[in-house]
Length: 263
Image (cartoon, rainbow, N blue to C red; front, top):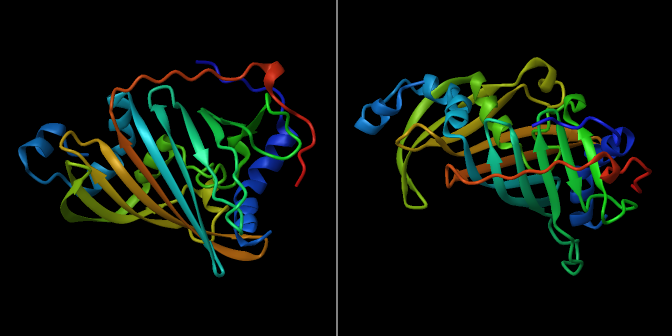
């Protein structure tokens, strides 16, 4: 699949920079082998975790549910998403639900997000964008590598971050929605270009793997500064329904908005 790289540079940058800040302001009132795992023997924890992305590519695709909890000052908000993802092509589609406004009265339209290598497309995002238009963000220009900017961590990116896992420890076996999984805990070093977008260059994580060595859940904790205020972000990605059909159609050039977006 070819990623379209036209238009929406200015609009996309504004939307990407504003997404997390606007949500917070609104809420405030403004590897071991599969055989080893299946047999019950414990694979090397660090090797298993670091190979998470490669195993997902081998698995092909899955359904995904995301949750991004953000806390700054006394304000805490949660953004949720649900959809499907193709790990081989690194494409996916999520329906992202923003929290209600401070009074809990305003109903916000879901945002449709399309993930593609080097790009994030968003629909129903940003005042001043026509309802039938998409905003395109060049994710290669984002300081955070699109780990938190879009309000939902790209599932492949979340898994790929585990390649930098260190100090990994096996916590134990647990039940995750009826599936027996192995729980590992550690921290992951952020790649140098991405680390610049965060206050800490190391991300604590909890990762859960099924008997086939597939990543089923990962919770990662980020810290950065937004408009001079520290923000703590906990991103949780759930992966299930492996082998699910994924049909992502990227917008045509004529459907991408490149105008002014109201702040």
